[in-house]
Image 1: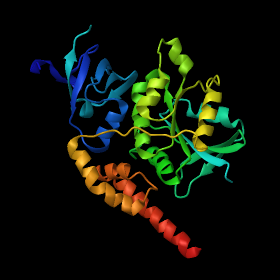
Image 2 (image 1 turned 30 degrees about the vertical axis):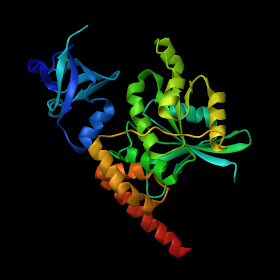
Image 3 (image 1 turned 60 degrees about the vertical axis):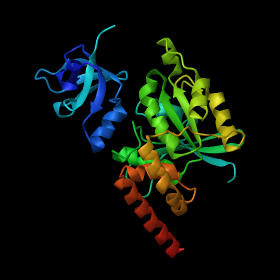
Length: 83
Length: 234
């Protein structure tokens, strides 16, 4: 796998599609994110950033969910090219 | 009281559980409180083919791992109050997310019916759902409905009737985990089933213990103490 494609959700730019590979969070927050659809293999779209860049809204399994930097930094994946 | 049954409605928020509840019960619902919980569950009744059903509307949740009070209330009801049937209401337009909860319920209890709600909305969006394949894969009846337009109700009520009268049986699919977890489940499962008998799924309990679910243990203790008190007072 191409290492250069690996970014955290926080580093994503508006419109990017990111395929999640790992979630470096524990406990209730990890569980919560998994329940909301942030699971390895899922493709997440960066919808928009707030004026100061935090939080960021993501599209995940047909729903928009905003994450703080604390969480989005710890979710990694690879950029997927638009078909 | 042999023809009276309890049905719990579980599902993600905004999947139309309450719409289904109201359509079922008409204006006959009232709010009930459960011992030790301030969160109230709506409750109502429906009659079908000489049987009475008490319907309980559980709080809408994405999960049942007791991450919040709502999840705990819903989880406790399914596990400890043991409804005769748990109806899992799914939103046809976002099945992927909704099936997460369905799989969790299938691990917890046997008699489950999956209702795929908002089927008319989904069809408008061009989403086609093959409920037969889903039924086969999940091991429980899957029924497409529209609670708002009362589509699929006869089918749903008949399935409920056939399930409580033992004409059909559920074989809910169990998620298989990796080897390490499965080994640990095997190690503790028989001990657990010695303790709880078949009142609670020992596999599910094993998984919760492996996950270190302290809230569940607290709930267990609370209920054991309550049972003791009831017994002493009796």
